[in-house]
Image 1 (cartoon, helix red, strand yellow):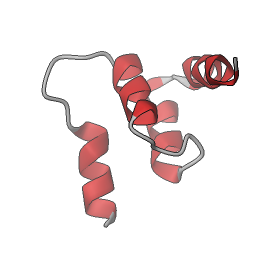
Image 2: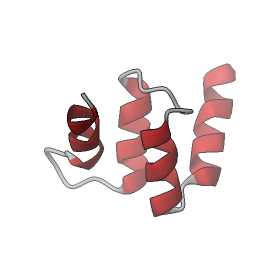
Image 3: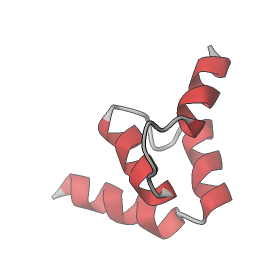
Length: 59
């Protein structure tokens, strides 16, 4: 199952930014605390973006 999850992290049908891809993954139900999301955030320097997206979800 991790192969599927790893593939989803890298898959994109169109040219999108890492920020857009992160937002897409969260929109389709990925857990923001999952190890793969955390790895993606770290690799792409998206900690502040993730925090902002999570804050927006709360409002």
